[in-house]
Image (cartoon, rainbow, N blue to C red):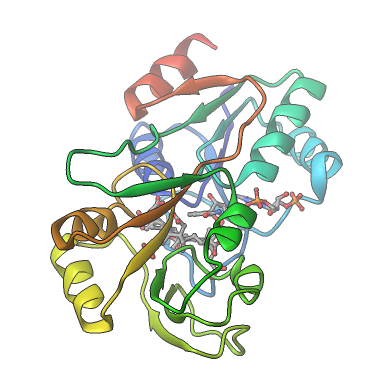
Length: 243
Ligand code: 3Y8
Ligand code: NAP
């Protein structure tokens, strides 16, 4: 009896939830509880951490989960690592629904850095107008470079900010290139800082940067242990039939 746990929070996870619901497959959609009002889903939803690997093992057992799909964001590395550990401990089939990393195209001026700390380091030097489009969770780290005039895009209005010189835009993607181009022109952006999220929801700022000839500081995604990786909803449904 199939009973799917979808670790969600991304565009791909939402597409999978629609397909699974349409096929009448028993499933539950899981959010971390990072934002105030996560998008509603056509499946039962649970919100909040499981309590590490142990908590996820207990959840899988207590809820009779038959398959786990890790459709989280490529930067949600801890969740992905926990899913690999918990699925092997419980002998539960696991597959990740992933999206390829973005690659620079002609006209792009990207400077790759391996992680957020290296991105902070790369911001040493004279003040610039920086579009920091990496969300809220890593803002503290960028406080080490207070000299810049930042444009921050956040999902929820922050109660306090670790950065003084910052204009805040509260917006939830997916974003459109024309809007991001107008936003960056209004701000006078000279540098975009981006995670290599892949997918379609966050790439508008890269297309806008190319059009405007603005450089991008591109943060590469964390490496993960090996696991089954699928790249489409159809592949997941096929995997479910055979796993
Ligand atoms: C809570 C669940 C959809 C899915 C929407 C995708 C696309 C739009 C673009 C920019 C970059 C960023 C951020 C971003 C995007 C999609 C997708 C994506 C980037 C929601 C959502 C949750 C989150 C968590 C949030 C993080 C933050 C990251 C903002 C829902 C809206 C920067 C990642 O304030 C916070 O605490 C925000 C935290 C993790 C990264 C960070 O470090 O702050 N996502 N984003 C999930 C949960 O609770 O489990 O409400 O829909 C989902 C989406 N955000 O089809 O509608 O699939 O990637 N999310 C990045 O990619 O760099 C914004 O501004 O250009
Ligand atoms: P993370 O750092 O890998 O996870 C930290 C802890 O948060 C996990 O160990 C787990 O807590 C909990 N968690 C994460 N995702 C969860 C989920 N889907 N369901 C239940 N618990 C979850 O993750 P993150 O980077 O904070 O991402 C959190 C959520 O935002 C994920 O759903 C992710 O898909 C979404 N998201 C993240 C980004 C990003 O840039 N990181 C971008 C877009 C969307 P326990 O250990 O207690 O189980």
